[in-house]
Length: 441
Image 1 (cartoon, helix red, strand yellow):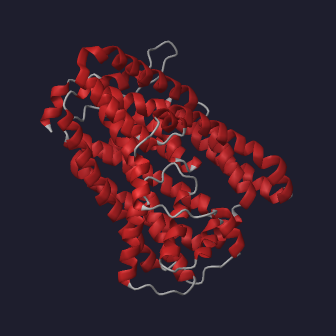
Image 2 (cartoon, rainbow, N blue to C red):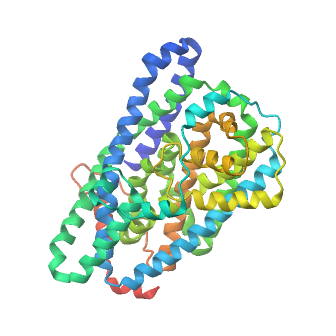
Image 3 (cartoon, rainbow, N blue to C red):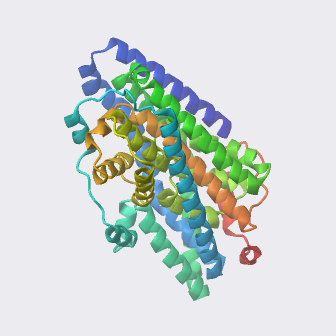
């Protein structure tokens, strides 16, 4: 099933581009916008809504069960400390590489400067979030509201409290732990059903974008696209090379396993859409669910490597387009500002654009410059979203290896209609590991 799904997603991507370009070339743009685009968008919106339906209960149940089975709160603190150290290091590498590459390539020199009003209307009002407000927003005042809004960071905080509490009360909480375990298996089974719709969603997402803008727009921004994607490739090489230092030859296995989450993230430009499938593939790779259930939600808030490279790249690109020469000291300050302001943006639509706009305003740079990249933001978003998936997959696998918990990967699996759920079995395997293994870290 996995190999067929990958093939179907690739076919959906190809058909989406072909159909979108055919419509763009033959149908009136106003008619596409009013009559055709909503139907393409419907396909991707249905899939994204179904994925969002899964995220909150999946994150809650996997973290609660994982921590409850952990039995050692010091292990949780150790994993969290190592994870944050990795995230900060990866963030600095991503942003710094973006600054180096944009200064080396200078894609903004001679870039077209479009309408100012259109940029402001598309980005919307920029909220200047204070540091104290951001810290306060991490802690939920209502667990149900956090789940209803899919606030992953708040769900993570509540789940940690719940898991530690269930571990502390022991046998009294056993029924709740079993219930959460069953909920996790159920959500993973539903994930398998939802993923069957992924090829249609991929087709709709790409057909919608190409039908509206056409592939011609890529020619106008070809230099920016090529140089940005070349920078992302270098970042991939760096992340995977660091991962290989810990995982050795198994890094190639990891690359093979995450190809489907990568395709989903790339084609839908949504990290959230790839999360359930990434859970499943890391199960197969040998990452216990108790670790992936903690690491991935944390990574989706603090380890957006592709988004951070994009923000540093785009900020300097805009300055170059307006002929503004920024000294190295100012660029370093921009780097540190992006490092702080980019945290917790995963669930915000067009969050990267909002952060870029706020940073431009803070340093007296032309905010309307966002309009330069707005036309191809969807195509840039596809690359940076896929990079986020790579970064979090490598981080989770490395921390698991660091803890001495990485298992032998599952054999290649061919789904039988009457066979037990492989996904659920893999998830349960990860949750049922003996807690004493954590002492090996």
